[in-house]
Amino acid sequence: MALRRVVVTGIGALTPVGNTAPEYWEGLINGVSGAAPITRFDASKFRTQFACEIKDYDELNYFDRKEARKMDPFTQYALVVAEEAMKDSGIDTEKIDLNKAGVIWGSGIGGLKTFQDEVKSYTLNDFTPRFNPFFIPKMIADISAGYISIKYGFHGPNFVTVSACASATNAIIDALNYIRLGHMDVAITGGSEAAVTEAGIGGFNAMKALSERNDSPSTASRPFDKDRDGFVLGEGAAALILEEYEHAKARGARIYAELIGGGMSADAYHITAPHPEGLGATNVMINALRDANITPKDVDYINVHGTSTPLGDISESLAIKKVFGEHAYNLNISSTKSMTGHLLGAAGAIEAVASILSITDGIVPPTINHFTDDEGLDNKLNFTFNKAQKREVNVALSNTFGFGGHNTSIIFKKFAE
Image 1 (cartoon, rainbow, N blue to C red):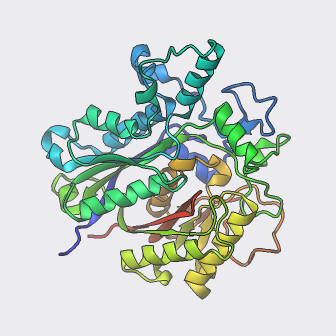
Image 2 (cartoon, helix red, strand yellow):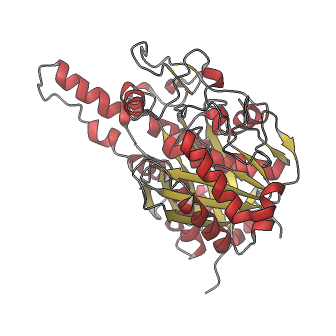
């Protein structure tokens, strides 16, 4: 059975450096940092007092007050970017087979704010069980996909993947394969996360995972820099419209890029630390290349996981050298998390959008906040430090890895008939 081709016909983004896909891309290529002191709550007692929050977001610009109260922010974000991507794609839902249209979404945590607030309310009210009737529907991670499918009447496959920070990329891979195999013609896929809360910051602080550079939030996310001290928590969402190629062609759709492959692997090593030799990262990129039926030399750009943690950045760079050999020195490599922070389960979605636009615009976004070379890294690799670089990008690979040893990679290619 020949696999069907899958193309990207719409994108949407809501991020700490831009509230639409064009604004997000403009922020990235200009090296804008989304990190700033936290405004969501009083963070003065926390070891980390900053994050990459969405700026100028007012839920009432998108939803009426009654509707907004029924949704956790992570679901709101999902609906906002799905709407942008659907409009961008030009799909008319009255002219497609809704039984072959589905939603496959990703979220690592789901409704963390809802869970936190309801439990706090319970304890503050002398443990009297007066829970909001929307508590459970607001909290569960799968509700985001449910809301999207209800809005557009999509009756095809509908679910949410949960694999920590690999969640959105897992969702994109699932959507790719469902379309390849003929189960869907159209998919809304991507991911959303809203974990900038007391529980989110406090929990990651307890793990010693977050940067504590409170004196300089905008420079705190510094992947591959000698003085990196942890990631910066981000929030937001991104959506892709994936379509079977003939379906997109028949309706005259604009095609951003072709999604040609995806890989998955497990470190099987530690619940939070990456394999020190990059075993899982090596395997996942090999699996993605094999699935895409291309060679390492075909890749031009890698949007790395690159979280700005001491161990993670080293293991990923080792994996790149193992997989790509001498060609590793011809690649552009960059971590857009240096600007957006780490969106956890939504990271793979916003980074997929960045990878796609690097192909369409011929620009590689930078890894900002590089000040000091790390002797433990091969600094002959082109990490695209501090400034975007123009180059033709025919093939872009995007890595996302998650706690639990979950590894995912996806590969986009410049579209050709």
